[in-house]
Length: 275
Image (cartoon, rainbow, N blue to C red; front, side, top):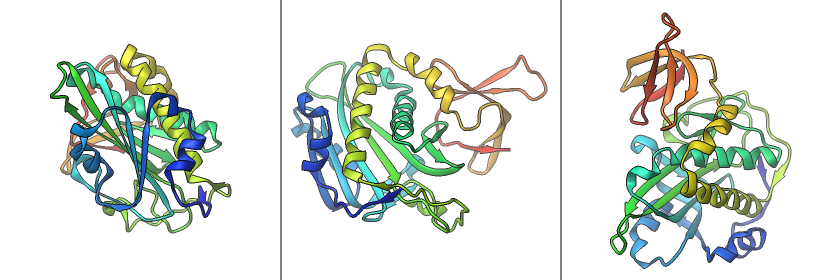
């Protein structure tokens, strides 16, 4: 994706979006530490869904506390605060549903991607984007939760450019052979399309949980039926055939020696790699 010279602005995002009828508030800032952190700090003042978009993000966090930064013009970083009825446990698997929504929207726009469990978007095997969700119980309502859904997406992928979520510092030194995607991209329009798809997915998740997203997730599964390893802090925990996800969003590994035996891997501070 090669970004056109369109600065991000709330009016253009709203013009392309169908979410104005839901009372979605949109704010675009030139620079901030973390869009997730900013929304989390202002939850008490929110009366409805709010989208915060940043041209520059200097102190963002990825999964397991990894640094997550974004450079102006080369990425799309935003967070959506969305209210759910239910408990924290009712949001299990939400990041996978969000991943499906993003993959569907990008594919519909001519940028086919795949999903790497639990929450990465891959393009040609390289990390193109990711999801970070934080859940906060509402003090004013019982059994109500704010979900702050952070999205980081590289809108430029070319030779010698690290494909990662907002240039994940842990991967900055990577050199890739990815070819540029020739189509220019209006980031305001893309942001609106991603948010519209995301809101539809959140509404469906509220009604049905993860179950309607399992089959689509399997279709986008980057490592389907491939041998993968699960590690934690450099220590090998499991190795097996990646067989999709279960009803709770756990990754299923088929034993390499006993095909009838499966291990369910829960989301945590673990790393998934091709073996």
